[in-house]
Image: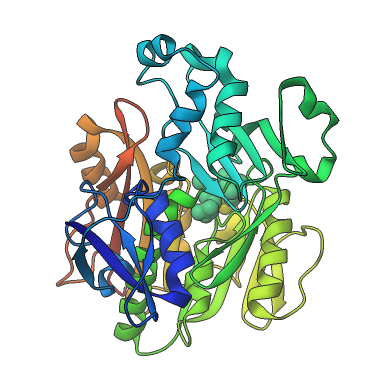
Length: 395
Ligand SMILES: C[S@@+](CC[C@H](N)C(=O)[O-])C[C@H]1O[C@@H](n2cnc3c(N)ncnc32)[C@H](O)[C@@H]1O
């Protein structure tokens, strides 16, 4: 018997994205319909948490026999076997990219150096088992201050044929386009991971931020003012804006002009109001929207922005601690406020980093726990990607 998450039909796509991003699904097994046809049952793998966090905790869990999916990704290795000797596959067993990330109709895989020479075969096998995928890209890491992914097309589908290697040069540009739409928390997000940071792996984080934002709204007894000064294309804002009466004023800024351009495209759909086509410097574009291009460390110098926000989202994990002193002045300290941040840190340094964060923060709201880093996943063998939340007391 295996655990299945019971999700109403209209929420399945969003929940599946979230489950895939955390690798909690048992994707050798099929999603199937409930007896009344109103829900779908998503198979969970044994490594998924017993109690799923955040918004996912609201869905019931049922035990059923798993229904094997013949077409699934575990089969990609059998497609690989049609091109590569079993001995070679066995000798490099750990190196084959068993994980991947779906972004829209693209798959992103990390190709280990030791299997680099088999890249074309990997691309063909992955595209072979995922017929809905148009493009497969190799992930060569995140680079620069804009945290843009270095992505290399390694395979594409053109009129039912799979192109790899030199034949990719002949592919029409639209087949190789990395600008895609995906649905998360009921909103369509436009993104292009080669131009602006985007990761589906942060869905859990975004859902947790949503729960915290609701808690803050309940405490303040009014819609909250949210500042996201490293907003990228705006994915953290999607679930917040999808919630009725949660967000009033919004500050959404980023240093990357391409991210701001995509943010405008997203906000114009989410808000159903016009935004510029190209990125512009930060300004008030609507009565409750201050958006645009800005260096987050300079925002405190704008009188309209300083001391004005209830929830501050800090998602630049390698710089959070360095930038905290420039960002704290954005909070409206006349009432309780919250900082939701992410930090990359050596596992052995977590205790010291907690001390550092607590020293930098203003006095905390009584009755709330001291901020402490929660490990979310490995960033490298020794580094951990963590998040924290801090409830700040009024001045
Ligand atoms: C890790 S990404 C997070 C993006 C977005 N919040 C998300 O969750 O997808 C960090 C973002 O910070 C932006 N950034 C880096 N330095 C910045 C700065 N000094 N001021 C404003 N944005 C900055 C990058 O361009 C990037 O979009």
